[in-house]
Length: 141
Image (cartoon, rainbow, N blue to C red; front, side, top):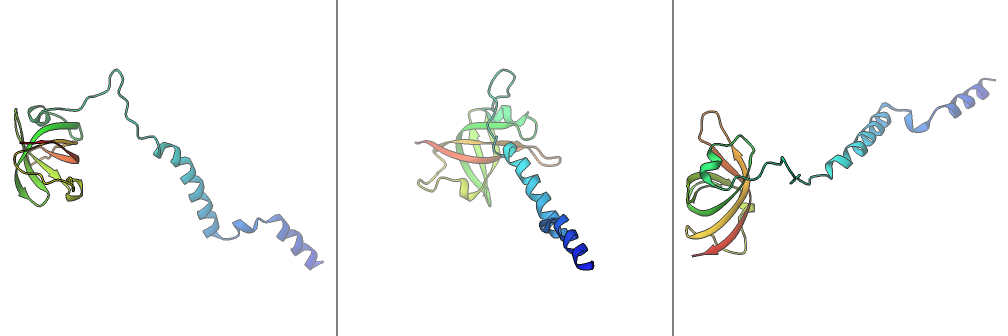
C-alpha cells in the first residue's frame, strides 16, 4: 500500500515546481514577459502639449534637469576628459561628450559647426551643463 500511496502523491505534484529555485525562475520569467511590451515603446509623443527641445545656450541655462536640447554651434575648447566648452550665438556652456559619441569619420576642430543632441544637467553646487548623447557635424569653416 505504501508504494501505491507514494505513486499517487508523485502524480499530483508538478515536477517543475519541486524546488524553490524552479519557483523563482518561473516567477522571473513571468515578470520578464510582462515588462517586455513596455520596454519596446520608446517613441516620443510630439503632439499638442509635448515639450520641444531647447535650441540655444541661453535657453538651456534656464531649463530644468533632463530637458532635451538640440544645440548648434562650435566646440571652442577641450576643458577636461570628455568635457568641452560649447559656443553658439547666445553664449557658452560646458558639455560632456563621451568619446564614443564623437564622430569617428571626421575630425572636429574649434571651427567645425556641430549639432549636439542631449539633455540639460543641473547641479546643486556647479553650473548647469549639457550631457550630450549624439554629435552631428553640420559644416567645417
